[in-house]
Image (cartoon, rainbow, N blue to C red; front, side, top):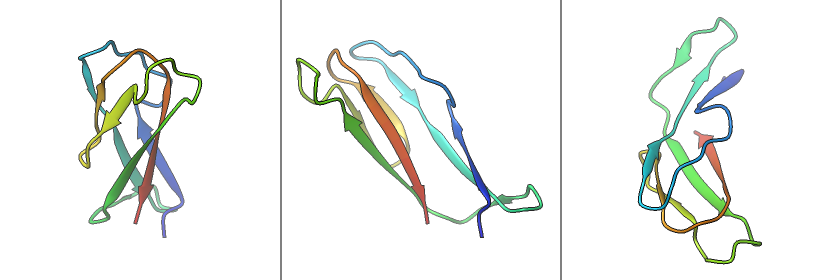
Amino acid sequence: IAVYVIFNPSKSSTIFKGQTQLFTAKAYNNSNVEITGNEVFWEIENDTNNFLKDALSINQTGLVTANNVGEAYVYATIK
C-alpha cells in the first residue's frame, strides 16, 4: 500500500507555447521504499477561464505540451 506519492515537478511550473515538460509520480510505502510496477494515469484539467481552449495536453508518459496560453492543473493517479 502506498503511503505517499512524490510528484515532480512539485511546485507550479511555467512552460511556453510549443514547449514540453516531463512530469513524474512515484509511490512509496511506509518504509520509504519506492513501490514499482504500478501504472501512472495522467490527467490535465485546463482552467475554464482560459481564453483559448486546451492550454496543456499530456500523454501517458507524463510529457506535458503547452498548446496555447493559459493555466492548467496536472493530476496523477497511481494504480
